[in-house]
Length: 150
Image (tube, rainbow, N blue to C red; front, side, top):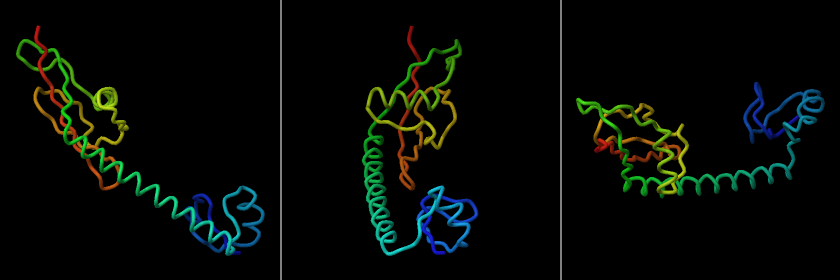
């Protein structure tokens, strides 16, 4: 039986693919669990319509990521850290804190898991952090650590 997968099914294929499976497997397992639909002209047309809508949505997400990248290039996020007597930082700044600062000050919402450089920043000066905003769209934000004056 020719079927179109509605979800990823282990051992069979990915969502949207057309596969041939045995009649019993399709009728007794896949169709009752709404994992597949029988391949017909109507279901093919509906699948193509859904794929076009998804492609349009992904294009909008990519455009949004490109705009966020341009905005990030102009931003310098500044943090003040206390220093030891030898002028080394007492502590560090994590990507979570950078993400929170971008959200609070600039209104840019970035998931902390999207940071490519995931190390804590523990040196005074400028650091460039790379962020994967979308597949093949990588933005850079500058982080400036400054010694807190007493």
